[in-house]
Structure formats: structure tokens, C-alpha cells
Image (cartoon, rainbow, N blue to C red):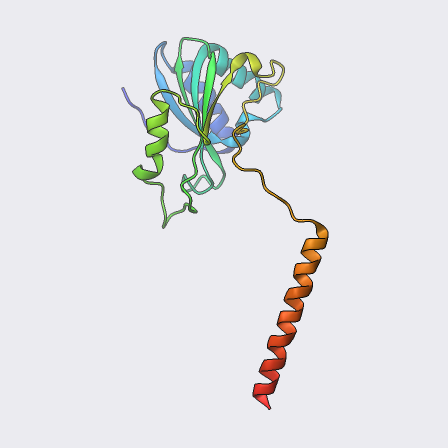
Length: 186
């Protein structure tokens, strides 16, 4: 049986997730949207709820969504996919990046989720997805925050001297353009 609930934020979302885990029957599956800060909050209630989620449910997928994915949430969110009744052994993470800003006039669409859906079938690793063994999660904080180890390409930073040289060249170019404009105005 599928049930749909409105998106909740703040403490309400936390209580909702706690209640949802409690009422879900063994073998029941759920996808819950929650603020991404839930994954790393250090307060005792968040830590114990993450522990409960890992020990009483199989949290198999964390979908990290960009800001604007859920209208009205107003914050960056994640979708937790889990099944009650078995412990979590591995968590598969997917960082959703549709390549554009999302919002009311530019909502998430089926095409944006196609790679996620395809990879989730086998929990495949990619530049946007990876697995974390629960044994590697800190047993004190149960921190589940999204940290992509595949991180993409490394950024080559310019030296301060290169930046200063470019600024001087741009200043010179600006001066030349300004002189040309002044000459036209005479």
C-alpha cells in the first residue's frame, strides 16, 4: 500500500521520520524526503534516529538532491530509501545534478532521474554514485553525510602572481577602451 505524506521540514520532519520507522511493518519499504542536515546533525536525537534507521532498517539508498528540487522545502534535501526489518550493511549514495537550477518554473523531470533509476537497479558506482560500508561509519555519531569520494576533477588554482598579472592586463585593456571612447566623444 502506497501512502503519500506532505513534505515536512525542521523538527516536524524528524518526528515524522521517527514515527514512520515505528509504524512501518517488517518488509515495508519507504522513501522519505528530509533536510540533508539530518545526515550529520550531532544532537542526541538525530544520532539515535540515524542509529535506529541503520539497525532496524536497510537504508539502501541516499539520494542527495540539489536546492530547489522540492518546492516549499526551502532547503537542500535528501531522499532516504529504506526497508524495515533488516540491518543496513551498505548505503548507496547518488548525487543528483541535473545541470541546471531547479525551481517552480524549472522543476525536476523524469529525464533528470533516468541515470539515478538505471544505476540504482544494481547500485552501480560512478562519478555521481558510491557505496559506503556501514562498518566504516562512525559508531559514535552515525554520521551519514554525503561526501562523494569520486569528487570529479581536481581544480587547478592559479598563483597570486598570475591573478595580479591578469588584473593588470585587464586594467590596461580597460584604459585603452576608455581612451577610445573619450576620443569619440570629442
